[in-house]
Length: 171
Image 1 (spheres, rainbow, N blue to C red):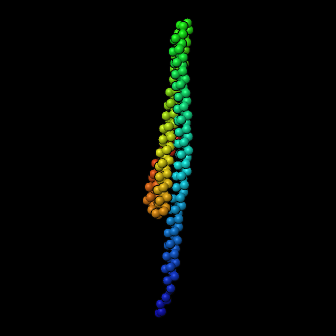
Image 2 (tube, rainbow, N blue to C red):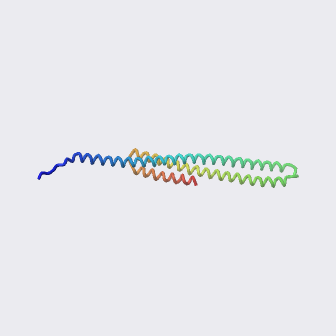
Image 3 (tube, rainbow, N blue to C red):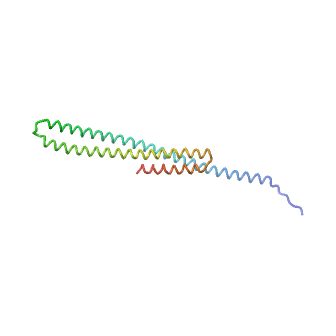
Protein backbone atom coordinates (compact mmCIF):
# COMPACT_ATOMS: atom_id res chain seq x y z
CA UNK A 1 0.00 0.00 0.00
CA UNK A 2 1.03 3.40 -0.83
CA UNK A 3 1.24 5.94 1.96
CA UNK A 4 -0.63 9.08 1.52
CA UNK A 5 1.51 12.11 2.00
CA UNK A 6 -0.27 15.13 3.44
CA UNK A 7 1.48 18.43 3.00
CA UNK A 8 1.98 19.85 6.53
CA UNK A 9 4.12 22.85 5.79
CA UNK A 10 1.19 25.18 5.48
CA UNK A 11 -0.37 23.67 8.65
CA UNK A 12 2.76 24.51 10.62
CA UNK A 13 2.60 28.11 9.37
CA UNK A 14 -1.10 28.31 10.14
CA UNK A 15 -0.59 27.01 13.68
CA UNK A 16 2.19 29.56 14.27
CA UNK A 17 -0.04 32.32 12.90
CA UNK A 18 -2.98 31.32 15.14
CA UNK A 19 -0.68 31.10 18.18
CA UNK A 20 0.63 34.59 17.38
CA UNK A 21 -2.91 35.92 17.06
CA UNK A 22 -3.90 34.42 20.40
CA UNK A 23 -0.80 35.90 22.02
CA UNK A 24 -1.52 39.32 20.53
CA UNK A 25 -5.17 39.07 21.60
CA UNK A 26 -4.08 38.21 25.15
CA UNK A 27 -1.57 41.10 25.10
CA UNK A 28 -4.24 43.46 23.74
CA UNK A 29 -6.62 42.41 26.52
CA UNK A 30 -3.93 43.05 29.14
CA UNK A 31 -3.11 46.41 27.57
CA UNK A 32 -6.80 47.30 27.68
CA UNK A 33 -6.98 46.44 31.40
CA UNK A 34 -3.90 48.55 32.10
CA UNK A 35 -5.32 51.46 30.11
CA UNK A 36 -8.70 51.34 31.87
CA UNK A 37 -7.20 50.98 35.33
CA UNK A 38 -4.76 53.82 34.65
CA UNK A 39 -7.59 56.05 33.45
CA UNK A 40 -9.53 55.29 36.65
CA UNK A 41 -6.44 56.12 38.72
CA UNK A 42 -6.10 59.43 36.89
CA UNK A 43 -9.77 60.28 37.47
CA UNK A 44 -9.46 59.50 41.17
CA UNK A 45 -6.29 61.61 41.34
CA UNK A 46 -8.09 64.52 39.67
CA UNK A 47 -10.99 64.26 42.12
CA UNK A 48 -8.55 64.03 45.03
CA UNK A 49 -6.76 67.12 43.80
CA UNK A 50 -10.03 69.01 43.56
CA UNK A 51 -11.09 67.97 47.06
CA UNK A 52 -7.63 68.77 48.41
CA UNK A 53 -7.83 72.30 47.03
CA UNK A 54 -11.34 72.73 48.37
CA UNK A 55 -10.31 71.60 51.86
CA UNK A 56 -7.31 73.92 51.78
CA UNK A 57 -9.56 76.86 50.84
CA UNK A 58 -12.06 75.98 53.57
CA UNK A 59 -9.24 75.76 56.14
CA UNK A 60 -8.06 79.21 55.13
CA UNK A 61 -11.56 80.69 55.29
CA UNK A 62 -12.19 79.22 58.74
CA UNK A 63 -8.83 80.49 59.98
CA UNK A 64 -9.71 83.98 58.75
CA UNK A 65 -13.07 83.74 60.56
CA UNK A 66 -11.28 82.64 63.73
CA UNK A 67 -8.86 85.56 63.42
CA UNK A 68 -11.80 87.93 63.00
CA UNK A 69 -13.41 86.53 66.14
CA UNK A 70 -10.16 86.87 68.10
CA UNK A 71 -9.86 90.49 66.94
CA UNK A 72 -13.45 91.08 68.07
CA UNK A 73 -12.60 89.45 71.41
CA UNK A 74 -9.60 91.76 71.80
CA UNK A 75 -11.70 94.80 70.91
CA UNK A 76 -14.18 93.86 73.63
CA UNK A 77 -11.31 93.48 76.11
CA UNK A 78 -9.90 96.89 75.20
CA UNK A 79 -13.36 98.43 75.49
CA UNK A 80 -13.76 96.88 78.96
CA UNK A 81 -10.40 98.27 80.03
CA UNK A 82 -11.35 101.73 78.83
CA UNK A 83 -14.63 101.50 80.77
CA UNK A 84 -12.64 100.83 83.93
CA UNK A 85 -11.03 104.23 83.49
CA UNK A 86 -14.44 105.94 83.36
CA UNK A 87 -16.50 106.85 86.43
CA UNK A 88 -17.77 103.74 88.24
CA UNK A 89 -21.49 104.34 87.66
CA UNK A 90 -22.23 101.52 85.17
CA UNK A 91 -18.95 99.59 85.19
CA UNK A 92 -20.08 96.53 87.16
CA UNK A 93 -23.11 95.73 85.02
CA UNK A 94 -21.38 96.41 81.69
CA UNK A 95 -18.23 94.52 82.65
CA UNK A 96 -20.31 91.41 83.46
CA UNK A 97 -22.10 91.69 80.12
CA UNK A 98 -18.79 92.23 78.34
CA UNK A 99 -17.27 89.17 80.04
CA UNK A 100 -20.21 87.02 78.90
CA UNK A 101 -19.93 88.42 75.37
CA UNK A 102 -16.20 87.76 75.35
CA UNK A 103 -16.73 84.17 76.47
CA UNK A 104 -19.21 83.59 73.62
CA UNK A 105 -16.84 85.20 71.11
CA UNK A 106 -13.94 83.08 72.41
CA UNK A 107 -16.01 79.92 72.00
CA UNK A 108 -16.82 80.82 68.37
CA UNK A 109 -13.16 81.59 67.63
CA UNK A 110 -12.00 78.29 69.13
CA UNK A 111 -14.64 76.36 67.15
CA UNK A 112 -13.57 78.12 63.94
CA UNK A 113 -9.93 77.18 64.65
CA UNK A 114 -10.90 73.53 65.23
CA UNK A 115 -12.88 73.50 61.99
CA UNK A 116 -9.92 75.01 60.16
CA UNK A 117 -7.64 72.31 61.54
CA UNK A 118 -10.10 69.60 60.47
CA UNK A 119 -10.21 70.98 56.92
CA UNK A 120 -6.43 71.15 56.86
CA UNK A 121 -6.20 67.50 57.95
CA UNK A 122 -8.58 66.50 55.13
CA UNK A 123 -6.41 68.52 52.72
CA UNK A 124 -3.32 66.58 53.82
CA UNK A 125 -5.13 63.25 53.46
CA UNK A 126 -6.34 64.10 49.95
CA UNK A 127 -2.84 65.30 49.02
CA UNK A 128 -1.42 61.93 50.05
CA UNK A 129 -4.09 60.25 47.94
CA UNK A 130 -3.18 62.33 44.89
CA UNK A 131 0.52 61.62 45.33
CA UNK A 132 0.04 57.86 45.54
CA UNK A 133 -2.38 57.83 42.60
CA UNK A 134 0.04 59.83 40.44
CA UNK A 135 2.83 57.39 41.31
CA UNK A 136 0.47 54.50 40.43
CA UNK A 137 -0.29 56.09 37.04
CA UNK A 138 3.44 56.45 36.34
CA UNK A 139 4.15 52.83 37.33
CA UNK A 140 1.29 51.62 35.11
CA UNK A 141 2.63 53.64 32.20
CA UNK A 142 6.05 52.10 32.68
CA UNK A 143 4.44 48.63 32.78
CA UNK A 144 2.92 49.25 29.32
CA UNK A 145 6.21 50.49 27.90
CA UNK A 146 8.23 47.61 29.33
CA UNK A 147 5.46 45.00 29.00
CA UNK A 148 6.10 43.94 32.60
CA UNK A 149 2.92 42.80 34.32
CA UNK A 150 4.44 42.85 37.80
CA UNK A 151 4.83 46.63 37.45
CA UNK A 152 1.13 46.95 36.70
CA UNK A 153 0.34 44.89 39.79
CA UNK A 154 2.65 47.15 41.80
CA UNK A 155 0.84 50.17 40.34
CA UNK A 156 -2.50 48.68 41.36
CA UNK A 157 -1.21 48.15 44.90
CA UNK A 158 -0.06 51.77 45.12
CA UNK A 159 -3.42 52.88 43.65
CA UNK A 160 -5.25 50.95 46.37
CA UNK A 161 -3.23 52.92 48.92
CA UNK A 162 -4.19 56.14 47.16
CA UNK A 163 -7.85 55.13 47.03
CA UNK A 164 -7.71 54.36 50.75
CA UNK A 165 -6.45 57.86 51.51
CA UNK A 166 -9.13 59.27 49.17
CA UNK A 167 -11.87 57.48 51.13
CA UNK A 168 -10.34 58.57 54.43
CA UNK A 169 -10.41 62.15 53.16
CA UNK A 170 -14.12 61.87 52.45
CA UNK A 171 -14.85 60.67 55.99
